[in-house]
Length: 292
Figure (cartoon, one colour):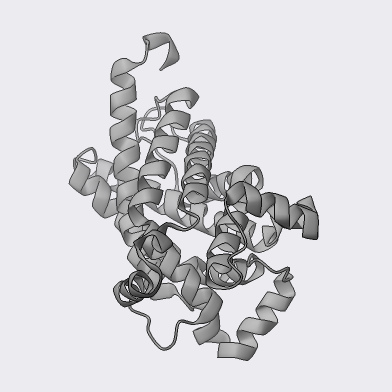
């Protein structure tokens, strides 16, 4: 997503996919720790570094990347789709001279992009990633992501195997994409209006980190319910809500894993937008003019 609004859908799609893959690989250990905390509580610790160290000690370094390949594939597709969807929606409403949007339009564009990405790719890949992490701690019966899909499909049917937690995942994506892309766009447009260089990697990283922090705090309850509903055994969304309330209460339960998610999303936001902006610049240099 670039402020000048001149990138083609092809460049937006490719740059978003590259950024999503880079961000997913770099931050996956924090995602793993966050998911473990949301599923099992992991004692009283909320320190992501401590939990990562504990997992390495008890299960080995490779355990931290259980389900990572699924998430990378999902992140490539998710960010490719949501960046191109956001850019396409943004271009339809932005000011043709300044290439800027109002705050409400920026957030609404991100929310629509969230629905699109959740339906096409986010829910299925999040479901399989969560089931793999859950299984690694419990029964250890899934040999690979494909084995996980085939086993769950045989046991629960294709819809639940791939789309368990769809409602909460979509609500999370509406909030996450709306807040993250919308906030980033608002910050960048504000900086442009004041003559700040928005194209430097440092500025991009800082803007992305701020957007990631706000997004995490606003959408954590949806993420917690989604994780609970997507564990290996079949758990309905309302059942997940009741379990969370019973185990930890409202604030402690629904905001479980916030520190772990912040540890990831602050870095993820910076990495995602920086990688996307740099990928756009690179792709523009190697893409024929007619495709830009």
